[in-house]
Image (cartoon, rainbow, N blue to C red; front, side, top):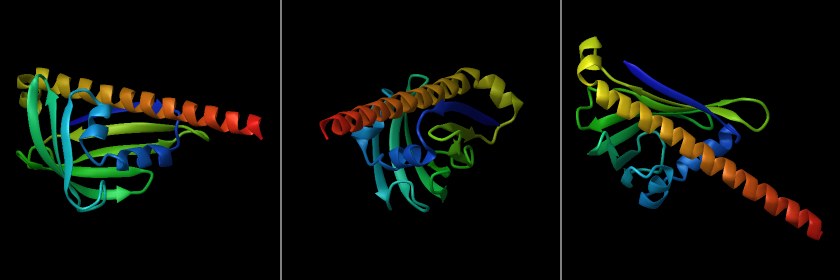
Length: 164
């Protein structure tokens, strides 16, 4: 079972990738989504292959304490990561993908994969919907953050040009 959410962001894939790699701790993680509680890298550099991150976040009203390992990174295009705990066999692969769209835009896609059949889908419908909603909100928040930063950068550059 795969859950996917995509959103167009008026930022290059390079800028999106750079922002995700800037997630070094709690402050940046909470900025991304208000249900995020804590995040810290316990091995390696942010979003590098083999790096391990510990995170806490609320989904469907429950606090989840999770560890992920980054399994594959294609700079400016893809970050794949796998759940280490709890229940690593349940969520074998998750990803953030950045697909270029035009000159200064991209499609940001989040995917969460679960080893589960139709029965799980019926029994855990509320939890699955909460995960979908959380992913959608993360995409929307990332769009807002990056597009506001882009406008701020453009304004600064325009003001500099006027002063020269």
